[in-house]
Picture (tube, rainbow, N blue to C red):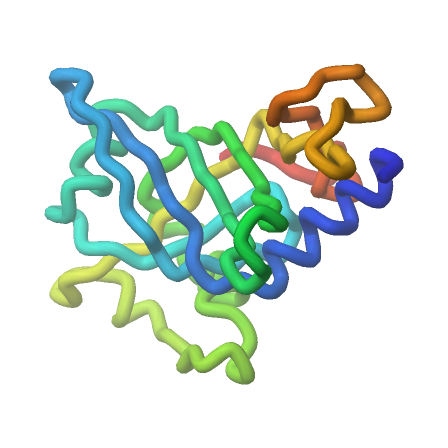
Length: 173
């Protein structure tokens, strides 16, 4: 699969799957993984809603570097593919909540309901968070458990993909 084909497959996974696994680390270095319902409009900035007291939210406050996996669990065993991201996460600043709410929680046909600023600010127990992806990768495709064509490697390995279409249009506030 060409790079464009792999990136298209990655975008299709992100469009189809409702939950990403967010991997964080606490101040003592203990890992924590959490599935969170997410939305993105550009395949670079990912939004979710969480309680500030949740373990992953507290961890982001201490260490904003996160890992993210969006795995396509809808396919037969042994045929799955995933999108892997390294990112920097934070609570969405109050000045950017309206922009985030234009994206999260996503299309209503995905089962989500529209949210308001009041849903994401005190006294509500939840806040909007975002992760801005840096590295984006997927498993290099292999046929019949043989080596991949591109690298000659006979085990699973990740290759970089560019999911967002125009990286110059983004800023990290």
